Length: 440
Picture 1 (cartoon, rainbow, N blue to C red):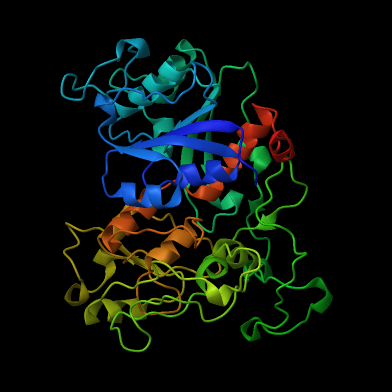
Picture 2 (cartoon, helix red, strand yellow; picture 1 turned 180 degrees about the vertical axis):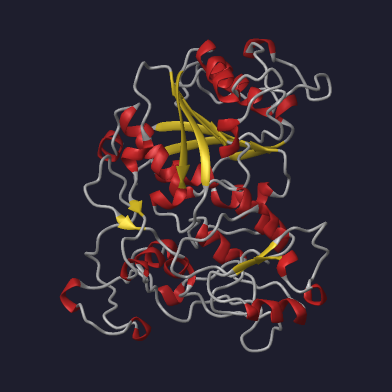
C-alpha cells in the first residue's frame, strides 16, 4: 500500500496490536504511549514511529506537527479496573490532574483528555465487555455516563460488543468498542462488516486448505493433497460492508498446525524452532506468514516459536485431556492437583483444533495450563499465541518470553483493529483503499 493519508495516535498502545491493524487499514501511526517499559522494544521494532514510556496521567499531549483538528484518529484501550468510581466530571477539568491527587481518577478520562486536546475527526476506544452492564456507586450505567462525556466534547458515539472470530481472527474474544466522530457522520455498525460466521456442519470445521481451483481433489486432509502455491487465490482478509458470503470461523488448526513441533524437554524436537519445515497449508497460514513477493518461505526466519518447560506432573495431566476438553483444577482427584483449588481456581484446557481458540489472556506469562497445544504435550509458544491473536509472523517480540506472552495477551487483535479501521476509513472519512492509493 502507498503511504496512507490518514493519521492516528495509539494511547495505551502496548506491543501495538491496535496500531498494526490501523496501519493495515490505511492509517499512519504518529505516536504511541504505554506505561510498561518492556513494550517499547516490541512497539518500535514493528512500527516506524516513536513510543513514549510513561504515566499518561502525568503526560501532556505532545506536539505532532498538526493544527488542532487535523489529526484524524485517536485510538486506544484504557484499562478500567473499577467501574464503580465512574462519575460525571467534566473532561476539560482533568488537565494536570494526576493519579496521586485524585483517588477517583480513571484512565479512560485521560483518553478523553487527549481527544479533547487534539480534537481528532474520530476516535476508537476499546474496553472489556463487562463495562456494558456495569453501574457506578449511584446506580447509573457506566457506558451511558461515558457516552455523555464524549458528547460533551463534541462527538456522536456508537458502542458495540464485537467477537474477533467474526472478523477472521482464529480466537473468540469479546470486547467493547466506542467509535465516535465529530463530522456528523453515522458511525459504522460493525455487524455489517463481519467476514466470518459459525460453521454450519462438521465439514466446515475442518482446516480450510489453500488450493489451486484447477487441482481440487478428494484426498484426505492428512495427505495435504491438492495444496498449491497459486497466485490467483482470493485475498485474505477482504473487509467489505455487507458481504454476501461469509467464511466459517478460522480455527486453531487453520492458525498454527503448520508450525514445526517443539518440546518441553529440549531433545528432539528442540525447545525452540527458528525455521519452517513445510509451506503454509491453510489460507490463514498463507496470510499470517507474510512472505514478501519474490521470496520463498524457506528463506524466512521464524520468530518466537519457543516452548516453556513443564514438569512431569503437568505433562501427565495434559495427556489426560482430549481435544478441546477442559477441567477445573478442583475437579482433579486431590492427589493429582497441581495447586490448591481454593487459591488457584484455574482451568486446564487443551485447545480444540476445529474451533477458534479461547480468549488469549496475559496470564499466559505465568503458565500455559489454559492453552495446551491440541496435538503436542505442552502449552503454546509465543508465536502460536501471536497467530491466534492475528499477529503476522513478521511481527517480532524481541523481549523475554514472559514479557512477550503478556504483550500478546493484552493486545487488540490486529485483524479486528483492521476491520474497524477499514470501516471508519470508508464510512466516516469516505476514503476507500483505492482513493488512498490514488491520493499518493
